[in-house]
Image (cartoon, rainbow, N blue to C red; front, top):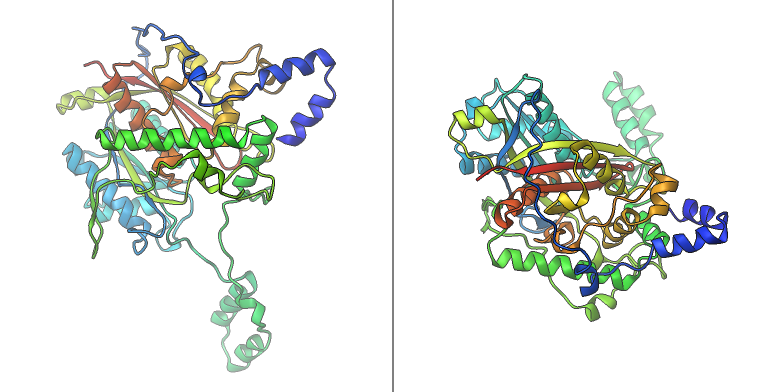
Length: 475
């Protein structure tokens, strides 16, 4: 991000430079910013389309999201995904044989259960006649699971789909080196003792070096934290602004937890351990304590730290999606409609984490809405710097005109409507499961706050992004 913005800035005429400077003014979580937007009158129109089936989310659940290496550390991914599916069955009382299809998103796959959706479904007692498949799209994997389900229902192929996500960072696959893998495969094929001894003679100690998975881009070899640091620098997001935003996330999550607003959580009895009932990564601190932490990625001058980044998380989620007529025929009161959605892709090096900036105006235009029509924003918080850089980009005419081929900015969401019950920085971010949490947070907030439209948005590895409009179901 620094590279392309710096180059362009140097080649701008002086008048444009001042426009750019003003367009990326400091953006903090101060009371001034929170009070900046006027409360808008709620729109009363619906996004129903005459020729398209109405698709609803009946309900959704998730296991508590836990710091990796804690209570879930001895499980396998399908155990956690099964728990989410069982929680959904208990919450909704949906008959298993009514479900037409099951889709689960994940990122770092356990090779023994590569189609974790199928294994979890069988473990949860679904019929072996119910198809299930697994999708992967980095941090928007369960978003993809949901929208794939929407497509199956909209096309008439299905009436009832369960979509979800799972990530178990406590036990990621660690491989032998490529040389060791090749030798072991060749040994397996060797037919004579001589062939085996010849292969073994080529063994070297460095063959035993393991290959650890990294949260890094394959195409650039750059870690996401490094990209977040550069993005924050490019948009002049200070360390203080990032810490302020992270503290806001933790405080709001703690408040929501204490008030019982995180109602999508279902308790999970961990085999051999206690029952887990709540997220364990919510830890409000103080700006003074956060300021003591050293940069985590770009040292010593970076601004991204452990305190203003999302943490490695274990967790699973699941939602029940239906055609509206099917849900009503079965006696359900849906929580929300799933409306328009978009996927976007950008340069994975310089614009890796700007998915929400590109996706938000597209989904609003597709739905015929403006930013002022949205009552609840739920954006994925990978890093404080990522969130604040996106908000600055969305509030910049210069960025819209020079990098998005748009005449004007979409605008910045008012913070009083933004991630009001905490976000990934505080609740946690199991890569494959976050999308369902975002949708249910939007749906539950709309019901609680009396709003009509929610906007869910997220960035993802590979420079991709997603946005979706959620419409509250009439009471």
